[in-house]
Image 1 (tube, rainbow, N blue to C red):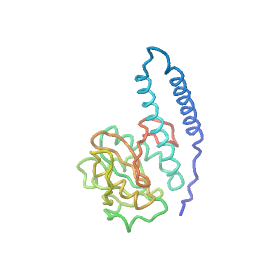
Image 2 (spheres, helix red, strand yellow):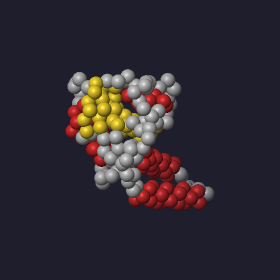
Image 3 (cartoon, rainbow, N blue to C red):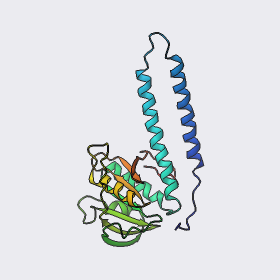
Length: 214
């Protein structure tokens, strides 16, 4: 069931992505046209194109994350700032945003919180060494329902050989529900989200409000 929260207008982000893809398409076409030139080496150009593709992928993930979350919570600005700060400090985090599917039958429920989502509370829950920093925080609409929840691990072998427990847990829950799961890597500080059994990077930048700026 959808929440009463209004979906935000992400048209500017979509238009920016479209423009970047047009520019990249033009760049690829130009490279194709110059490939037959004598003494022309494409290796550097290919590397730059690959980097551009990765940047577009990450920004597209950010765009779709906002689209996925907006009908279910209006707290993604707080989520954004919190995850950005956790990433910068390399504090590992696992944040579950419940959508249509009820999660209590799937997860092992942790410690009840029952408080409104705020930046400071989220960051404090994942501070290393605190009693609740292990496990996942469960968010329903604008409320932190519980902390220290245990999620089912994915049994699918991932291409990344060093996929950690947090990431396997995020993927595992997304395989069994429509939840969106944010993950901050303790080792690298990289941020990603899981949806429908897949893991997507999120762009690491500061953006305006109403955009997931992690």
